[in-house]
Image 1 (tube, rainbow, N blue to C red):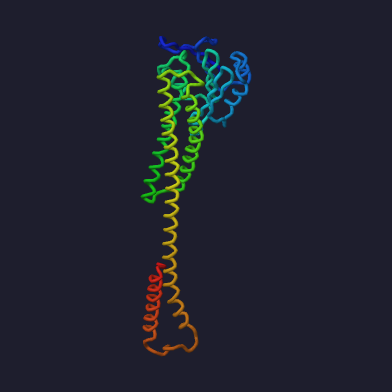
Image 2 (tube, one colour):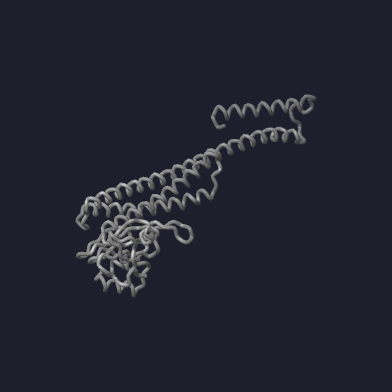
Length: 309
């Protein structure tokens, strides 16, 4: 799908046209091979760069091809199955238009298409920076949600109410955060190259936006790392708690086994049809009970001395 939008500084609403014009925003979503060929011919684009934009695993970077600038970023979104993933988005500065190419419908672009943000397509650099700001905001929202989920699971760990589903959630959250990290770290390098002003002309206001983007992006990266570290710490803590509880259980079962085995051994011997000491005494039963108790106490004292229990 290819659409042509235009909005100047004096315009109140975003207008859609049937063809491109100077200062337009060429919006491309999940293009067909025919549409890609049309874009290449119409704007004299590098077909290889467009093919990269349609690769789901493409990483953020900045490329320059003659007078054209290609900026790749990755955008976080919620898939139809409810899972959080990232998808590439390509910005192209071609002649006198700005082109965006994405595989999916993205919320960060919808905010501009629905006139929820004040912008102008004629200010190409500022428009790209505004879209990137929304992308960073989306990452922040997903990271904040992940932080809340981690805190909730950690609270259940304190109450020993953690379940197997919580560990499944941990794996999912950790995968999402690692996916965010792999997208945000290269984006930082791209933003640093943009901040130099050698690839795109930056006004003072644009320079401030780039610096804010860099700061927010770095904060998002640190938040991802912090959350991943929290997940690892919680997992290690639960493993230690489980091991400690297992050791206590084994010690208790060992003690119970000793308490049961010693009397059975003595009583078993006196149940045999052979001559045994004190078997004719009327106090034999009392002596056996006393001997059994002494043995149990002696074994218990030995285990305590050796700090086995």
